[in-house]
Amino acid sequence: MTTTNTHFRLTSSPAEVPVLHVALQDACGKAGLDEAAAYQLSTAVVEAVNNCIKHAYAEEPGHPISLLCLYGREEFAVEIRDQGRPWLAFPPPPRVKGLDEIGQFGWVLIRAYTDSQTYVREASTNVLTLRRRLDTSEKAVDADRRDEPCGSTEPVGNSLLPSTGPQDLRG
Amino acid sequence: MNLVHRKENDIDIVRLPERLMMADAPDARTALREIIEGGSGKLLLDLSHTTFMDTSGLAVLVSSLKAARKKDGDVYLANMGPTLRAVFELTRLHTVFQIFDDAASAVRSVQ
Picture 1: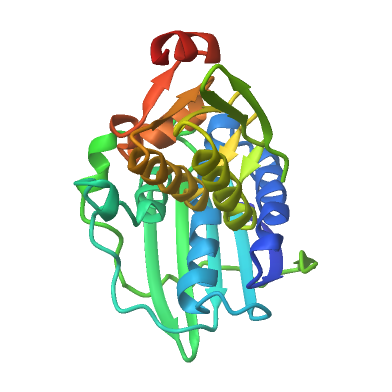
Picture 2 (picture 1 turned 180 degrees about the vertical axis):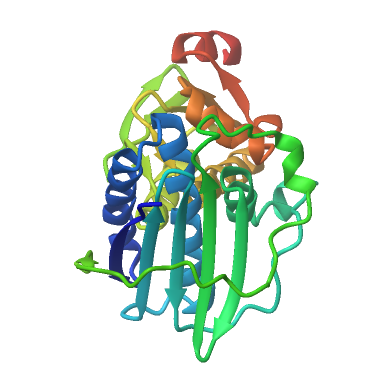
């Protein structure tokens, strides 16, 4: 199976995320995702990168975030790496009980818009891999999925190819 | 970030930008709060130009809603596209906001 990869690098600055969003949608289009699927996958990745900035790096700018997008005929995978604080666990499903308790929507979207999420801590690096099957371009996004168990912390398989020609998004 | 603000009777109507993301969230939150504080508390957000909103953008809307309700007002949403509508449904925020097909019907309903 032919696999294509695209590598993006940015820093933990919110101002760089919109540029990444556009580049991701372009990469999704090249991978053959339709407009809706590209929107959903790029939304999930943006939320994951926002989490790197907000939680791993506590909104401190200048720290590295890298993304490796791998896509073939069967799936589109995005490996997101940061060197911030390690995760304690996947966040629990949120509940909207009142305006003061609203939150963690990022993970609602990540889980709804990708087919799998895996996290591993490699040395001092957080590695989150999001995968979306390409044979389900119209991924059924059911609001009830919010309450499903989310992701796993099993190590990511060794399917990622070496990156070529990283695209530097740092502004 | 470009917020287009106008008033219709006592309703503040603000057209949000094409994207509302983490980078713009602090400025948007401040601007909308100022509009709410300076007005009746009734804020209609026109999403006709908004194609993408991350959860920082959603948080801005929730923050505005809290500020509006403190003034016995509310935040109304209009012209929401299908992809954004899906985001609101996934996060259940469609149960928190009053959502209208277009700004005119929102104004008619609120007055």
